[in-house]
Length: 134
Image (cartoon, rainbow, N blue to C red):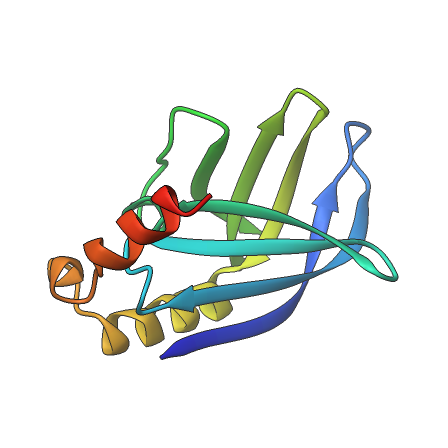
């Protein structure tokens, strides 16, 4: 089972302006601990960030994350948003996401795999095979 969702987001510039960007969110029951957030860099290139579903769950309700991915609920112009801050050696970006859209995506993941039930869906044998057949 896979859950895919595409949205329009806003990148917040260092100077206070915003730039629209497409995002694609993916969750696979076969990889129950992680979500993939991909952002369209240009017409045929997407940049992917993989992070824990538990981080997404926490970030929807309060500031969360200590590493390269940080999330926090915010209000902009009276609208509920989710701030996603991503950092790498190549740069830093803050994206403003539609909180309701991300919440809906997250709810679909929990319908697929209940929180706390990830181990029932995780195929350790497949992971070992993938690692040893490199």
